[in-house]
Length: 461
Image (tube, rainbow, N blue to C red; front, side):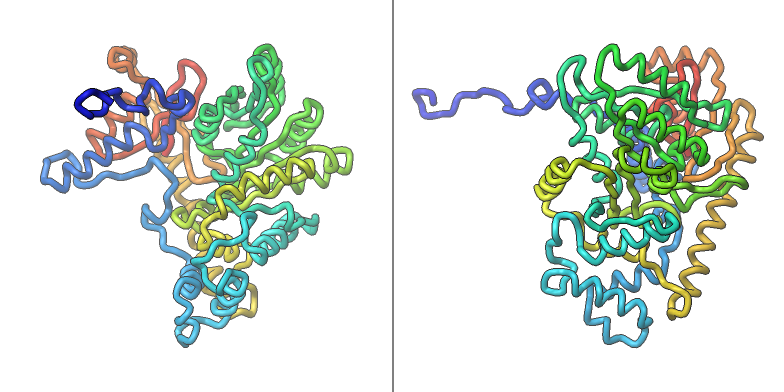
């Protein structure tokens, strides 16, 4: 303190120079500069600024309801009952919706969806998730104690990556991620200070995964880090491919041989459109390969309420199942999730409805199936239409969209545009997408935000 009693001026405690350096490395293109500019343009339109378009079309993120998809009636009925239980006496609600709501509320503290839940998640919901997985995988057992409810799948993915990140220098954990990839992975790797290990999907073969490419990537990475984790997104985001069973078996063998922890991001498991394609869960394939693999390979798989036919992104519901995790590590995982108390209880309730949906003979079954089928059929039609239309545009080529909710077309840019982008210190496809936004109001994410082979340019829509 100075002689006149004033505090000395020392500047800000927290500055860009003194903040966590890893946070500055985080990049999340899905909500990056182009999206920020789109928000500004929306404000300008409201203020009466003249544009060559009347509205911004946000095709940058898989937010189905924001794009006009209607919620599933049964889901919203049960959520209304859970959040306002007085409606349980209302004859407008079907009995199966009331029964689901009562069961969920009875598992909540004080029979209220507003109470904290156990850190691993509401007990009856975890049991329902385990039963769902067992049905989905043809009777292969699922233990509720291996189920953790999460704040969307993203929360579970980051939590597992935290457990796996360790070491310094050449012993620092390397995390193998596909290129192109969903930016959650690269952002999380940067934030945790792990080492990003890229393996490239084969665009010429519909974004397929080659084991030889995994081997190349692994061998190169071992010269400067300790690769311990292999991340798979199936069906693929942003590339829309669906892995064959043979490919999944090959990946599991590779992980077993190289002693890698497998992470299977399966949030698009209901979104399969292409003829001849089918979703195979990594857990199911793992156990069908026999005890040589099923008793050894460590696996965490993830699902969410945000995608598939649900599109309930805002509820932030999800789960993860861990297989063959060391019991002492599992105790640490439970401790780690306990620090954040619990995932949002409404998201947990919605996750329960996804895995415990109306069954034949129940009042809501026919309406539920009609709505579910309509959503998935519309998505399949749009996937086909997107591919066909993009392939008619000069300079754009698009692989078949086999699944998930996106296409990832390749764009051929003239040398002049590439040079102008470089002069502005922008990636060429970032330059392209920004021009597209300014001239048409269409908001896309450039391929550079997902990663791509050098000299190629893409966007996701």
